[in-house]
Image 1: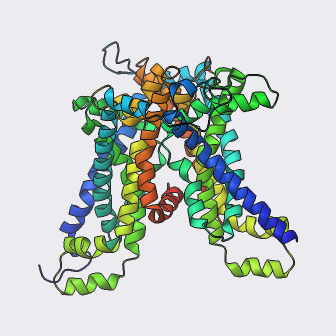
Image 2 (image 1 turned 135 degrees about the horizontal axis):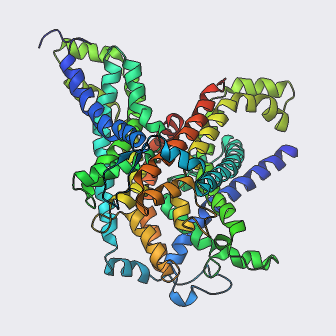
Image 3 (image 1 turned 30 degrees about the vertical axis):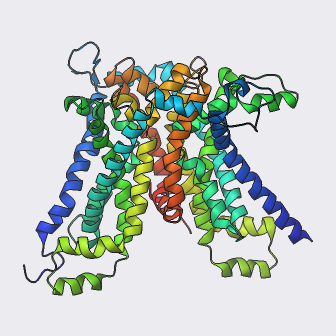
Length: 291
Length: 273
């Protein structure tokens, strides 16, 4: 056992790395490839027949599937609405909190509460808030002179209502990243700009914002990728309704696989969704990060 | 004068943000404690004598089982994920070997594919193992969901351990595993804690896989709340709210206790996620 040295102990390497590598292979990578293969088969587990290789049939079916198109559109609308607001509000909040004050750490801790709240609970909370019998929102909106609204029950308002809940839940995420970005800007840079007479909006527009751009873009893309696959809150708040007006792509995948038991077709949907989010990620890597 | 106005505006902004953040959670708590006869009062009541009937009913009807299952599943998943991934992260920082960067990338690749991409295969694998509706059927895939994140965080922490420490310990005859256990782990406790709590929270909050893999015996808190809301959502309001409060509570307790570690852990995890 003498003369232990880096690289001289291959046993140790395998002992340390092996379990994790094997585990990830079995539970992450193989299932991913399996989904890819399933997407080329026709397999309805309810009918009991084994999977049949059908080449690109599922994908061709998706091209003409208006329910799938509607679900993609719902996810995209949701993604754009939620992400844009979250980025704007999150950055604004970070600018607000960045200046040091008494109780700053405490306030930061409070402000990230929504993002650690379980999405199921977030859905429940907003389901209560929006409810016309038990929630407070109806009362206050009525007092303001608008009529009684069943926000989650009407096609026109259901999706915006869920977007609002998402903004509440995930603005803290952008806030957290923007704040760490702000704290990375050297004090001297801000000082110099101040001496040159920049303040308020001009300071933000020409000094802070350019230095924060990388972080803002990163936060936006990460939020967008996550928002596109929204499932939990929609499942809780509307179940995709009224009608199918809030049926997101993930919800449709879940239903196709586990209420219609069309595993092959659901797998093809997953691959398309994955392709779309991957292209968002590709976009992210293409944007120069100058921080 | 303008700077004083600015400070005031800033204060008001911060107070508003805190209120908007807290009000929804506060309203959930309020609803869970509201006596039935005040539930539908117009205007909504914010001051009343709290009633714990809903929480008693949760216990009487046995809903607390879901929380015990969630506790078991989340704790085990977090522990296993931290064990596997910290060993892996140590290997990736301590050793030099061919394709090290590519291998690391392959390991965190999973993080870039949302779990939904493996929903059907994992359901089939768990079914094949006969573990549907069993806590272990959830723990197995959950560990894999958390490993990439812990790996990222822990690699960052292990990189900060000075190499001289390893060298002097090696000279004293310590083997690689001893270096890992006696030098790296004690020096990176904050990282282990942060990534462990993070894994616990994410596992606790997960809905989709729990929905598919469990039905009655191994139902988690998230599934319990979701199915109860679907069935009784507009009837037993306080009970829904009480279940909601209980779903949030453990996460808040953890977060409150470990706030300092968590902000750093969340930021690192979020940036790399």
